[in-house]
Length: 437
Image 1 (spheres, rainbow, N blue to C red):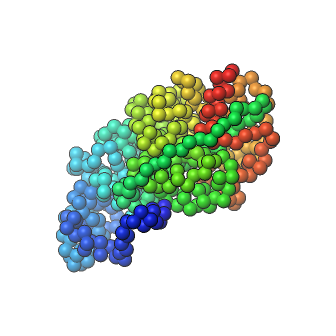
Image 2: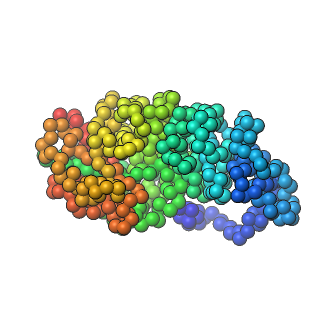
Image 3: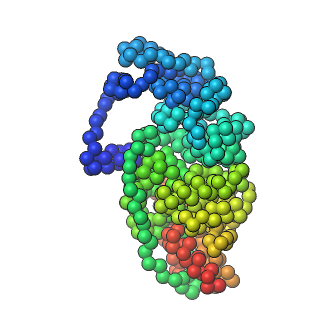
């Protein structure tokens, strides 16, 4: 994505300059740098140094570079060696930016740290539940935690309990620059939609992991199993997309909208503005309000929910907002625990995934999913029983062309009388069927 955005800037007439050394940048921008925060790069204090660099308007430098720092006229303004994340938070908590934090393992020396320094964000790494929740809570309501941790479920639970949401971004590069690039997010108008025919089954495939900022603003765009797949456009496919891109990387989101085919559609990644478990947050209404605002900015109309425990009723706060037409709901494990159930609220549906396309067991392989769709009743007692929402696991099926290859294979096996539609069409047809019951 960085390469695509550079090309875009060039087409727009922006002068692009190339530098071959970090020290050239230091020379050019020396008046804007207060000095250096030194640290032993491989020590446990790298996060402490990152936090201090943001607060002190400095750069982080390994302690072996003292001669180079002197030559560059960069004074040492802090020594982070031996400092812990807890030390930094206890001393400087009031100085950090509110509403943002960075959870980053110390072994990732470069990724995401430009963003942390630019945003004056507290940077840490912890597996302690109470410590995680406390950091998030004390940084303010609805704190966005950029990065990742060693255990997905525990991380999201702890951040949710603190009142925040996770933005998976631990491998991100260049967010500090991308945030400043303007772009107009184009409107997308769905095509005409025929009514459901008698006996027809309606199927919608949705790609997982759209909360993943590092991938969507990174390699996703050129990955052959994803956006660059040769099958894209040949069938209806819906992609989870992080609405926060509209704020932190606007031209990246614009690029996807601009290059989408009529068969491509978008919903939010799990949670909405960030990844959170509705069952664990202290104020679902506040999370829903921020999600609705972010969805309006990103021009997304369907929210995804990934919950841990709780029930589909936990999505109702989202459906209270006019910016949100529907919710696609999944459980942490398995995603399709609701088995296609629909929870109607204020005339809008929260729709549970009926099937998953995932390389973990045979019933979730293309043949198994196609067979399950074929077994849906031709004339169901409830019109909802002819609708199948299918979550496509993003990291499966690499031996058959990735997840897009698996979707193509599943479609090839579908019985006659099955219509594959986008998320927008799926919701519209379900609403029509419910109105006719």
